[in-house]
Length: 504
RNA sequence: GCGCCUGUAGCUCAGCGGAAGAGCGGCGGACUUCUAAUCCGUUGGUCGGGGGUUCGAAUCCCUCCAGGCGCGCCA
Image (tube, rainbow, N blue to C red; front, top):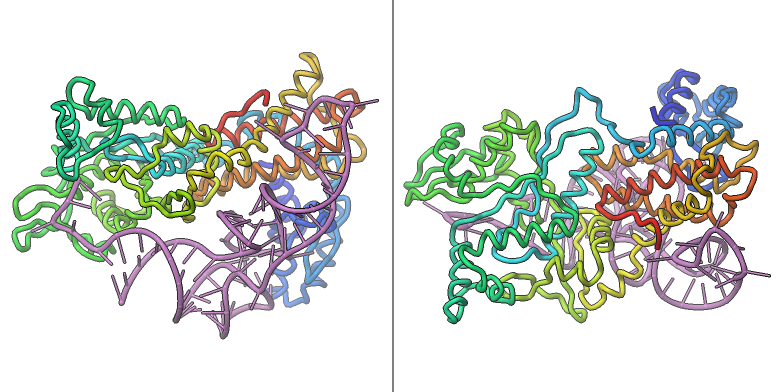
């Protein structure tokens, strides 16, 4: 059990009531604080401050607690002993690289598919897909770290109008002709024209290369034509009816705002018919299916949930994560993105400009609900100020300390009689990591990781500045603290797909 | 018209029931030191407006305003 939870449990047992702990911003408010008295006051029918006094007296007797004070409307502020801090560090060291991992109980661990990116292979990935990849992959990494079995899948269209137009554009180029109306243009079309055969597999190879470079690994690739084979069978399992010659699925029976056509009056299946067939796949092979879609697809949530309810028995087995769009600014002007308009920034261009680390950090750092604007002209300049380097520098510094300390240096020791404020802050920050990961995983909010990592980096840099590590009496103790920080910061970086450099 | 998302410091954004935050920018300091890609100080906010729920609201509910994105027998 993480040290904060354990402390909370001890406090609760001692007080005879549930105690939740929070971290005050102000050091004068103690190492931890609890609002338990405020919550209990109504049911105990006592003034909050009076209850807080009793609570403080009880909690003050615990070995982990140096002193307990009442403050404000009825908060109890707790100051902890060095031995508590020592145990906390020992726990982080014992867990090593897995500190905070596996927060999901064995019985609740699930097989989860995260379907991400899934852009039509009609061109290189854009920065819009980059956000999908960065967000979806970070969610996948979090769920995996939490204890689930996660598979990342890319679904691609390999037939249909758009793909025909794409193939025709490449063929036209090969014949030295202009592309058809609404065709695709760009340097990549010229490159594809130089290769033999169907351009779609070539494009997919390039997309996979871009994703690998972006550190997004796709476990499986699902082609739409294979799914389409299963449409007739799949439709038998859902509630359909025929009207005006077309076949409809009664998605409104499960919360959708209108029923959806699956077979046109011509008999041709719609795109949504393939979604129905694909849903069978997902719910057959996985306990839970997660879609990662741009905000322009938010209208799909209702129908996907509806067919999940029909096929999988519950709409809860499907989750649709929506992220807001990425807009481009050029010289302060908003530019509409589109592959066919040629007005687009490719993922590879973004990586060339600012690097994988800055790009992934930048795209995950903002919550999915936030629209992102990238000023192409400022991207490079901004990347130099990207907080990712501030966080990576922590890792480089810890590595430097161990290089200097040498192979045989003792790492970890009991705490000294008094701790510097910077040491206390750093340790408390480390203790919060398990709760941060758990919360981020549950809420599918990977942006919590960069936010936390910056706070941790802040505490480490301050510690490094104020507390000499090597060649002092507390060296072994402080090296333990450095190792613990190194483990946690490396994990944070990995969870968002950023490298942890040994030198900078 | 209906639906989803957003509105917090000059800028970009975290926080989403418990004592208003970070980065960047601005201003002023700290390298003979385990990496200054660092640190310290300072500047800066009626958390879009108005109601409500609560001991307590940036956070939950209602409403209004502003912006983004959607509402095909397209893919």
